[in-house]
Amino acid sequence: MVEDVPIIETAPVYSYTYDQILIEGWSRAGIQSYWRVPSWNIAFDVGALPWRFMDTDYWFISHAHLDHMVMLPILNARRWMMGRTPPKIIVPKEIVPAVEQLFAAWMTLDKGPQDCELIGVEPGDQIELDHTRFVSVHRTFHAVPSRGYLIWERRKKLKPEYQSLTGPRLKQLKESGVTLSEEVPFPLLAYTGDTHSEVFEANPDFYRAKILICEVTLCHPEHDRSKMRIHGHTHLEDLVELADRFQNERLILGHFTAKNSLKYLVQRVQELVPPALANRIVIWGLAEEKSVSIANK
Ligand SMILES: [Zn+2]
Ligand SMILES: [Zn+2]
Image 1 (tube, rainbow, N blue to C red):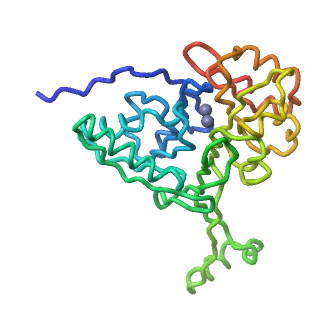
Image 2: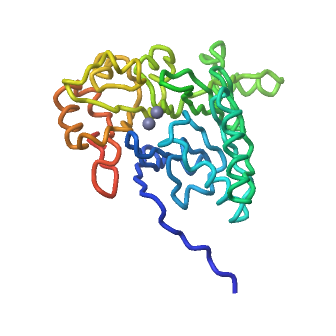
Image 3: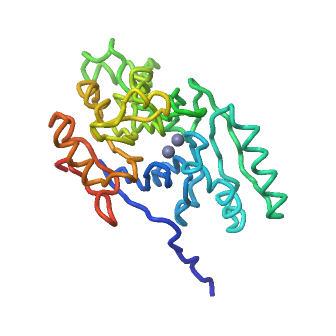
């Protein structure tokens, strides 16, 4: 008899579904951050490793702060132990040598392999996921080398010169061998990782992503925002200043400080954020066991 492999709960996971896209994860500053979109086979950051995240093949790491990357050796080891293929680990190019040293140290200590495909990336790079989706790599603004990621879907669109033609005429052209459509990439989901809010003006495509997962580490009015640039974090008031720019259908706010409650963040969103934006905001992990959206739906 073949026994099913049990699910073992190893870390908390919140989930949220928007337009049939399921997003799972957990994220608080200095504690742990990890996210995934199971249907696209991608994850962002590995500050902890829920058991069911193990099957994800593509891991996009925003930066090497411990709360975002400490479980990477466990991911490699667990995949090997459970007979999975080595994962693809995408990291800022600058940190590749140090990550290789980390793997070497763990192989010495653990006497087990650290098999993975380690891919260093720079802003402007592109990673192919499958024939319908790819990921672009972006500059972000943090205290250590860091990257943001944007998932695109390849969509076909009728070329402008053919858009006014009738169906029979289009059929005729198609049959004569004319290519009627062109590929138009559609921005599905952006993940900023830890960053100062300067990231948005530097990457205007982030404003267009259907879903934006961004960090809001702080929201207290007495916090000195001038220091945010040095540490590379975002204050809720930064988002308020850019409120008109966000075209995203949903903004998921993660990585909030453990020094304030999420209820306090809700209160500040209600006080500061214009309703047109607040209605699209999802505060990650608001209830104990599941994500609660303050968006209408
Ligand atoms: Zn962090
Ligand atoms: Zn960080």
